[in-house]
Image (cartoon, rainbow, N blue to C red):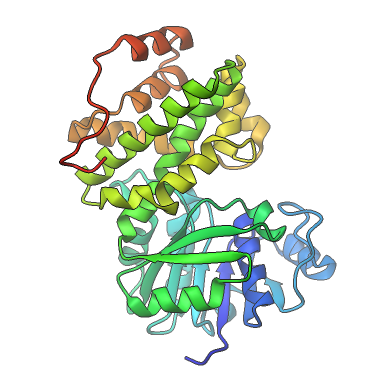
Length: 339
């Protein structure tokens, strides 16, 4: 590969658009694939993604397109940035057209319920002769396009993938760190969405800083326990893809999952909350999947249990909170296990 790369981002949402724009700004050939032809035409003509990032101009090097085959077949790097429910379908669409040794990066933070697969595991199942990585971290797309200083993590077992993504995706305001623990980095990105709903709910109830500090640290402990049981490195959760993403998503109303929790905390049903958001809140689906898996593995996750009881079992919120506060008090930190 040369120092100038051809990159296709599959998925015209906010994060996919932000990443594609950085790559274009860095001087590489950058394509943004969308299913909707009319939306792609509007984006290309107006130089703006009016649906997801209105008001932010796109670089001239960025091309919005509906030509998936022509795009991925000539790309050095393919980035998949679609909701988890569509991820396998899009991977299958791209699979026959990828060149050997193409770098394929997932930015999707979710879990496939059918077998408890993370997105990069789906790539392993659907693609052959490619090199796989993930990009995850405390990254709101709106702030990325505003050139706010942002850190992210690329994870892969291939050193060349780590180096290439850092070279192509980094900018003066978007810094990328590397981590070989692909599974742990992905788990962090998926799990934190659950706890964003918890803290959104707490904010709606008027909880103070003491409560938020407790929730954040106990959330991190739950994430670490669960990840360690699945074979990830719990120390990964002390980095940007773990604690960093957790803090961001759990403390800002820019997070869709936080807003869902906030709406439920104000008395709305889950269905009403999701409808009001108008975009995919990955944490709702992830909560169901993680609850089931935690029970299978016998992992202690009281916050997951409590949130599930409120959202899906229709239990009274105040009773669930009281149960959490009066339950058995475990140790703060598992010194042998890490978190």
